[in-house]
Image (cartoon, rainbow, N blue to C red; front, side, top):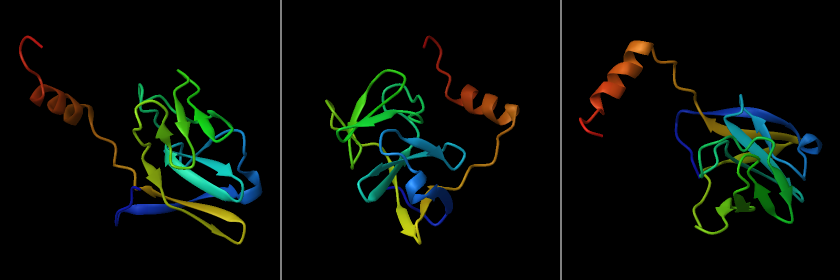
Length: 127
């Protein structure tokens, strides 16, 4: 489970607003939450396949399915069916019917210059 001193608690909504048949994006869609019975779980909003968003993925019989390429994850731990790799997860707390998720603080936007310099530093001839 991801957690550090730079995490931020965000309100995902009321417990009853979290669907049991789909995952929904929270925290600016940085994370997704899913409800199973009386528990809510949160994962990074990124499929392990091609890093596509999981937001809107269907949930049935304890399986979360990526909406883009149908990769499947066993809930509640987010274990990929096949490779066994785990989705990064976030702590969830339910207080007075409100669902709170602890997500990493957003990094400040980088300038085009910073992104180009990073790309240039990783460049290798012939690659």
